[in-house]
Image 1 (cartoon, protein in one colour):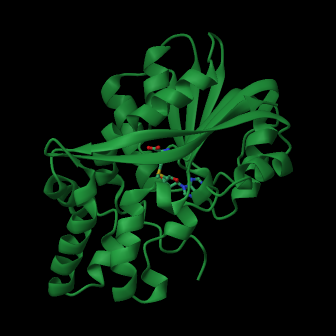
Image 2 (spheres, rainbow, N blue to C red):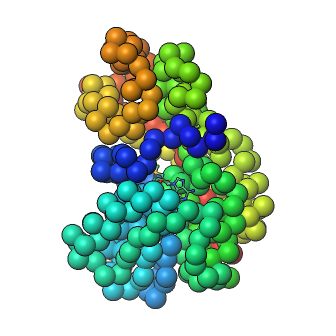
Length: 270
Ligand SMILES: C[S@@+](CC[C@H](N)C(=O)[O-])C[C@H]1O[C@@H](n2cnc3c(N)ncnc32)[C@H](O)[C@@H]1O
């Protein structure tokens, strides 16, 4: 089994991934702030999914910057490019491309960013080496990766409750998703990729839902755990929902579900 295999099938869930964008927005804002884009910049968003945070940046600086987003999943790229067309933007485009083998020239981007992509790459170090290669000397990067399983409660709940009911090859992909979260792991990999001037800070943002049911309906409707769900009989799905609902009780605040998640924000220059 490759380490990436039990990730969601990004091609298949592309049309539904946007459901998560409002929850992830604070991380995009933090990345854009650290990136410090300036007029004239050529900017690359790696693993750009359905287009964020690249689209927000392109809209904020329309007419001032050129943005290219790349993602390995063609379905995600299709959704992102449809948004470009619908929004009538002419300073941004998306291409299907694995982060580990960028077709861009060395030293060709002023800025590179990546939200929740690097830890999912088949080869995270190679992806970071490519990020280093395409950045111009003095160019800036900013990236976000998930922290440890304990600081990612929603993933932790799914793993705890679903894993005992599923064969190992279908376990929720907590190991992959948090593979750069442990102390020193991201720092070490950034050094190996060639970066020497960077900062890593651990930050927290909340998933906010009107209730636990609203959250779980969202998980089901977005197909983010489809692979796992499809393998469970109907009765087991009900048990999973009930058990995760119990774990979530500690996170109900004034009737709302508010779940803090940690991530590592890294930024620096080449
Ligand atoms: C959690 S989504 C994040 C998407 C977007 N950056 C966002 O924050 O909304 C992870 C994305 O990484 C992409 N991905 C996974 N492995 C990749 C690789 N080796 N090269 C490029 N993209 C990859 C997936 O296709 C998916 O779109």
